[in-house]
Image (cartoon, rainbow, N blue to C red):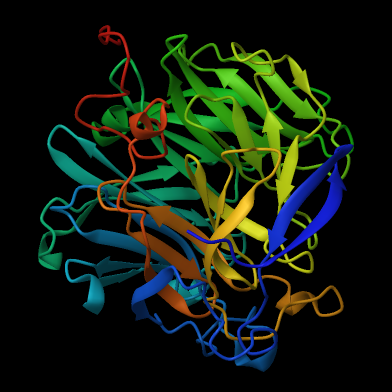
Length: 466
């Protein structure tokens, strides 16, 4: 696949870094016919009502942009072609999009929180699914503020086994965090090597919370809370309550450990969570020039390289070498070895790693895809700009956040889905990318995708957990 964009050079963490800049906003910057690279094709687009102000949306910004759509999650089994897309602000909730016919994706169910107009804050922000004992569940996270209902609500779990029949969907549990008012900003569902299905949640505290989904569904006390992962003390003294923003959890087959990668106060942290009741820090990425707070932190399948976001305009995605000796984590990393951006005037949001590709939901620039086979010289290999408004700028904070929010990839066939703040749901295909398995690249078959039936590949037989 040929590269798109133009090359530039800048310095990140002391290293000279090369990257490619793709053009920016559709109307403002792309010449006619250059909204996308030639190897990326849109199969379906569903607006989801985001392009116009909706009732109660006080964050719409200028030009009547709704900025309604937030994160996105896609089921991985081909027999279950369902995508979950959040819509924030009142009336907050989520949609289920059926992609059985990729050329004609359609919404088959919309859920809105009760008394929607009374709720304050961002509302529905993140979504994950899991499978447990033969049944399928969707977890929707929320961030509601005090002054309205449910300020302590973190997430709602729905049984979605009966899809595509929406009449079979039912709420089965709610997770509340009364000791950390403000809900869950991000969540991550993980099949632990000991066999448990776990949920990791960002809360309004200097820790990440760990929940056991089987215990939650059984009505256990404290909603199945089984552990907490702290931000190391002293990480950010001026903000003592600052915690995590986002995280990723994966199994390290080489060392037989379950590893947590978290971005938050002060930078990024790596923990061994094989024993969820006793997390042990392995590495920290702190003291990096330009990074005081980590956002998203996603490693390569072998855990060596990590793509890291810190959320401010003009900031590139940085690439860190967490295992410089190629064997185990360095106790401390303070310099990036590479960096990438679609457009130096803009910045990226969430991303998914399918080595050597990184799929990025980029503010203002929509879907971006780069290759990090050489982590010191990442190269753009495809893009599709989903946002048809002007780029945001510091002078108008209400325009700061727009364009791509979330992205997901189906490993079985390589389909890509993206959520755009304003333009909604997109289903995309990149030429030549017809699926992903780490073994095809000489890597462990590890990504954000979980094997809910068998657990992590290479894991030792599970021991009973009490």
